[in-house]
Image (cartoon, rainbow, N blue to C red; front, side, top):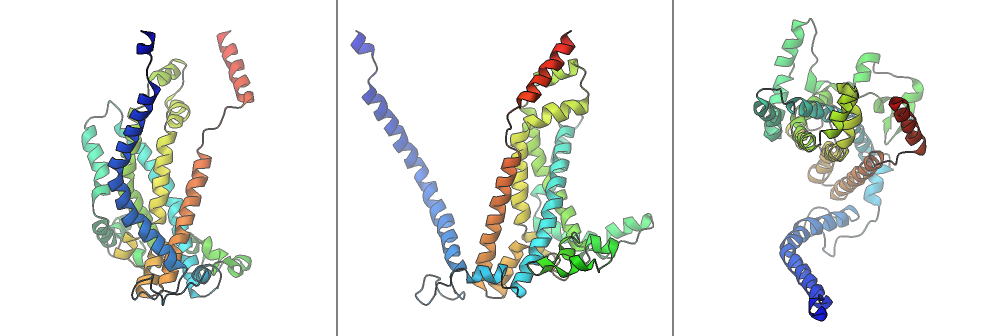
Length: 361
């Protein structure tokens, strides 16, 4: 009887092998599709970035030669027009990321907290209204934005009510710092630089035109991230917050010390998606200014397209795309390190124990 009751290991392992085979069988079509339409094009683009392919015929033809890192050097180290254009695009996109990601994250979290309140009437309407710009065509939003922010548009009309003369938004190449302090900066900042762009231009802030794109990005993306934060808020347990309320913690203390730490996985997802989307901004630039005025709205993604399809520099265009890929990976890893779970130090544990003992006495 004991022998009959004992499970057979061979049968169990055979069952696991059968489940594994079934799993591979069901996932094989997806793996094949990803390999054909994702992995193969990426490998071909990598070959184009290290070759002299001229855009005619197959990049795998025998007439295409390996040139090593020449295309990357033309973009990063040669100091020519390609290097300066890439430095300008990187400067523009860096300011775009620095301003859009925090603003859209903070606004999305605020909206999520707002519509998550049980006392708010019409929460379904507000959720739909806040999310609606995210599902609208980016091309349509860009056209509407250019109309609103034109020299004689509605935005400048509203500013005139307060006695302000609005700028010619999408035609003003001046940076925010240049607008406040003048076009010529300190000699030390005006002479040195990186990637063909002076330090004064690096620090000039986004141009007036890029500022309009920044406002548009915050307007159109906050609704999507609001839903992510809202899902995270609705999955939080209320026991800890109720205990904090009984201990006398106010609303801000409960949010900062209880709610926000529990939203760390959602916050990491929102910041990662925001970083990737901001570094890959293309369609708004293509449908709007196409890098104008004076290349102050040029981005690496649009520069990659322009180098390949307009200037027929296919190798440089692919090289810019892979440099942008490395930038995104580095920023994601840094963000992951910043938002990692940190162990509580013994000093903080002892301080907490002393506080608890003092409160108990």
